[in-house]
Length: 198
Ligand SMILES: C[S@@+](CC[C@H](N)C(=O)[O-])C[C@H]1O[C@@H](n2cnc3c(N)ncnc32)[C@H](O)[C@@H]1O
Image (cartoon, rainbow, N blue to C red; front, top):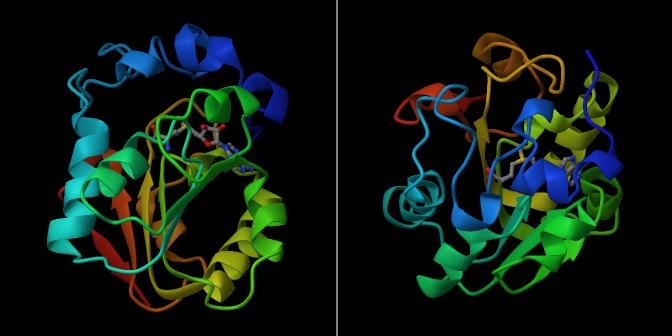
């Protein structure tokens, strides 16, 4: 299964090329066409709900790193909710140039994590990021996330997008990786469902 390469996370990916597995108008919080992702709306709930859930349900406090943060919509929601020690990394220069949040930087997730000390962030969060990672890179990425996260990880995973562009697997396969204890995995097709692993 192949995934997109770094140069493909460009303007057309975020603002118009839904045909390559991207978005129609990410800056307006409109995600993929309802034809491709009927569970998503254009009202911004995709970002607001996880931010509210992290704050109210999981009661995060402390530092948080988001991987694959794109324009930083969730980070902005968290920062507005007074969760200030938040940081984002995305491999796309275009996405970071259009970031709406503070503390977002361009970087490959695995390479960037290597630069952090153990337990650097209280929480690591991602949404629709893990399926962008090559099969061979997933175990080292998860190992690095486990090392850098002090308390808990939260990952929303898309298990339903095209395998032409993403590394698609079912939830059982995702759960079977070596996660740190209490990691929460949520399939975007059923955002109310959470799997607490290990
Ligand atoms: C499907 S988009 C999801 C964006 C956002 N998290 C959301 O839910 O709307 C995947 C994001 O991951 C980023 N990404 C892909 N591979 C990456 C990597 N190796 N390191 C960091 N970011 C990566 C892409 O640039 C893109 O912004």
